[in-house]
Image 1 (cartoon, helix red, strand yellow):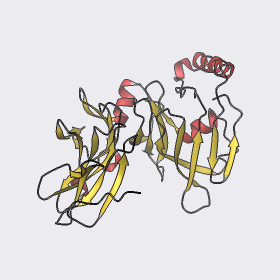
Image 2 (cartoon, helix red, strand yellow):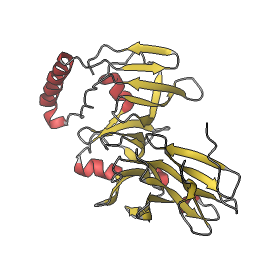
Image 3 (tube, helix red, strand yellow):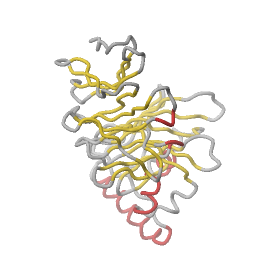
Length: 301
């Protein structure tokens, strides 16, 4: 175990690490007690990412090789609404991610392997996805306007992404739905759009018995291949949350898209045919582990 040391202050926290463990980012206090985003390597030690007096911030994520760091900075004194999301590379330095739909991008939570795709949220947990060519775009509007998921996302008010795979194929997070108390967990792929994770596990993975009594599932992390998803959830008549892990199996099948109402019959037939093909290819069965319990579903997904 290695003590990462610190900048000038006494407090610090590591928040993310590269795939091989050689690069770490997080926050460490300066001489004035303000947390500063840092990059740590064994060769160089802890290096401050910004050299702006009176500013504070933290690094919250980095890509697998550690060359791209994302995080948030703000001026002092602290005000939540003053956070601004950033992207940092050694060659380009620190770049703010701008605004989306008139709102500043406040936090960055994940970055793809090549550093070209970043996810995060603005105020009111409104999620965005950022690329160099398009800038920051509202995630909910993107799904509705480009993926045409108007019916599927009816009532959704925001989508807050928590994690993205290095290749950008999977995003997991939670969203808010009108008249709902807690956030609704989702998984997103370019082909499926956003799928309610609890409904997906029950209806597509057939995990009805394992999820009896569960009211919500919030995914916080996903492995690079999309096989394992972990998070927390709420159970009726119980206080607090319970952790869970979903194992989608080796060579997992794609997340199915929600059939559009006009072509429901044709799409359902195609999905059924797809299930048969997936079973013939001997895809592994998904397993859901809830605390000490572990059960295996009988569906080929």
